[in-house]
Image 1 (cartoon, each protein chain N blue to C red):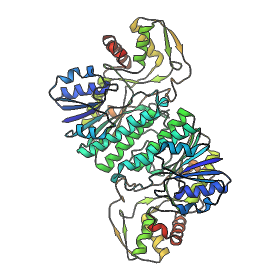
Image 2: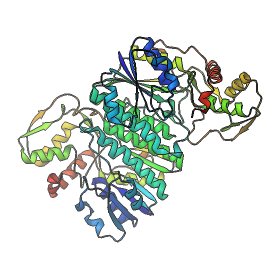
Image 3: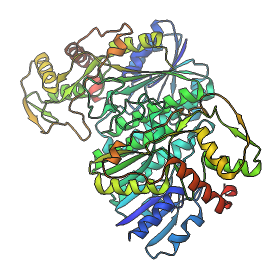
Image 4: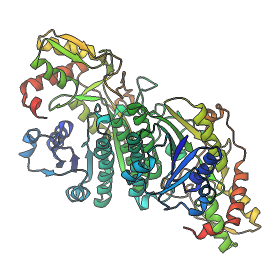
Length: 317
Length: 317
């Protein structure tokens, strides 16, 4: 198979690229390096079946040119930062919604017909059913990030109906692990490295969140591609547990051997549009034979190991 | 109140403008006249509280300029034709999703904080629950039109959370009545006027659809604005009945006194992405004290009366 991976130099994308190459697929990685890193493609670059294209998903002709000949598209490129939507609403629209439209149009132009899409559990907003299944009640969006991914899902589904595409839409919890470059473990690690005596915590620390280790995430994607056969396959990805932000802080500070004073900003949400409780029902992907190998705690610790060995990523943004 | 109505020269928009003016509100109608008609503003134009701005919702500076000073925005401008999405996918993205983003940005720029939005029952796709309530299971999109409106809903909801807006999102069935300029009654009437002996019918005629008379639709909007007080109010609008396309054909041919041979194109869908059964649960809007005055049949007959008295609209597009 010839696979096309948008965001192929990013956190999840580059890990996926390595896995696809190891499984003897040809891979074209497409990335604008806004958050992607050359270093993440160190292994891939030495592989004869690998091609890197520097380009932007907002540039449709470049997408079409790079995608030509690919059968399977993994669309991972995105503005993945959920917190700052209200500071620049246009960014989520452009990089998530319009970019997804461009990927679909490039598929239509090149004849690619299979698409895996990185969506998010954030589209459930303040979920009314927890753990939240894929067929939960029609949600109300609470973040521009979630809204932009919902728009991407809708476009993909309509293209499946209108143009005979097949899709796998993955609603991720937060992903952790090697090449992780943003999120709460990143922020806490960087902060504690500078000042181990105090830690600013958004909200009251009681927010309940879910995380998944990146290799477990990729396992799930590959299992689903083989075993989920609907025209549109929507699948939650996560572990069967959640943790409080405070649990995560305990694991991180314990691992680092520090005891900071915690400065809570207060309130039950870390930011506008933050969901105080994210916990997805993953029965559907489990029924396909997948289960995660790492717990949330193990994922957090694996991420700390990675950050410790790769401190360059802390200044890389 | 000073109201701003996008699509104010269109079918529903111009009827709303007349109603708002009659209720002593100031109204700015904003329309690019792509489907809007000068003639629809005949009554409004003589009103001192009425302003017409010719402009496009894709032109953000023009929107901002025209919206300044308005408190309440009715966003009705759209590519409202659900059938032709696959012929020009960019049109729904531009005119429905990006245009809605622009309306929200214009509101942010001008300080308008209340928004009524014309969404659609098409966003339920092939609904798994019928009649379909607002909190039905998370749907899968089947049309680019539905996807583009879903994206608009998500953006509006995220702006309500992020910027303190309040919104009323109306999921319409197909609307009928005075100034109706597209849809099956229009198509059938025009076709039968040219050739009363044969009628081409998309699908098998067994598709079950819902319709609502335009003045009932506007009544519902005005009731909801007064009585629905959530930050985000999502409301289905429709009658408590549905009809088959064949029922509608009987009413139309009976009213016209013709007996055409019916040429069915076949299949249970009229077009790609067509939903074979649209019937919305309207308990929520009914609980606010609204109910429609006309049945579907009465709405169809009222529409025929309008078309008969205004045959210019048949050639107007």
